[in-house]
Image (cartoon, rainbow, N blue to C red; front, side, top):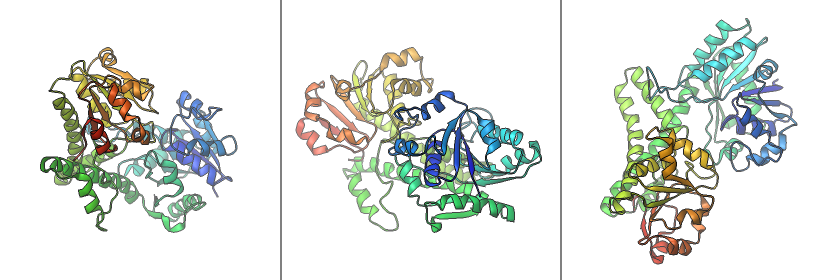
Length: 462
């Protein structure tokens, strides 16, 4: 029976997942480790107000268990040594060099974890892949563990996460399914059962699926590819709707009522972002081409191309509506996070739209309730489109939403934060440069109300 768990990586997956396990399994000691001292200090914040990740319900969950059976530490080797089960939950970014550049997953952090575990472990361990990894990564991890370790026995399981940021806690507590893959040997099946027993503390057994390890690894990539495909599909329809004067919301409602299709992920927008969709699809494209499946790779790559096109199209619409001149004009961005209820900005469409408009010398003023100014600057600088000083001259983070909109020529809704629906739009209208334009990249706002106030409203697919 598992009594001690260690999770390497205190990020968006490791932190919430371990907080839920600790809360639901009070008989198991859970330690989350990370080499980033600042991140660990934030998880240990006495007030619980400065946690490094914002997720609804997470603060309360951490407060329930931290210091009892949930611990956050930088003592990686100590936690590995004392644990029976070790989760690897580190970043797997897209390679930016060499073979597979721009597509393949960079597994250097996963490999580093495996080598540390192999060096430190003195007794048998179960190692769980929680990071999103390419199919057959478990074989690589197992090889490292068996050939560089201390002659102890390891079982490697695949347990991919299916969390949506903004609802991660609920996704863990009420998971549609938990997927666990392992070896089809007695030892492998025993390891699988030990992880099944943990999740069974709060989930019905029929939601816990077990497979071979390769199917589990591939299922994560496939799930994100299918979800992203739906977003790109409805966004492609949104452009046709604009050309034909159809309404993409009505089209989405009509097709979503077909039980074979369903209504989820049919909300047209400025494009998807986040840490998973683009990275996982590009990884899938690389795998397909690696095995000579050129047409398969081309098919999935088109999902990414459509997403990039939607962002570019949105930015160009802002430029065209402002008489093809945004130089020194103020454009207010409502939201910078890639979706509501998270402070994650990775691959956010706001970054790319801002980059386009700054290239045209626009002045971008951003209000986001959870994203700090330094993160916005870092995101923009990471594109290396221009110097950080030039970016700073064109990007202003605002603490007040009305200040962000004051004097603006246009407003772009980039994140679907609920609070944007209930702003004093008459006050905003009075404060803006006329004619005031609203580009609703999330189809969030009340179009008729805004038009009645005097705004020129431009939604997606309407």
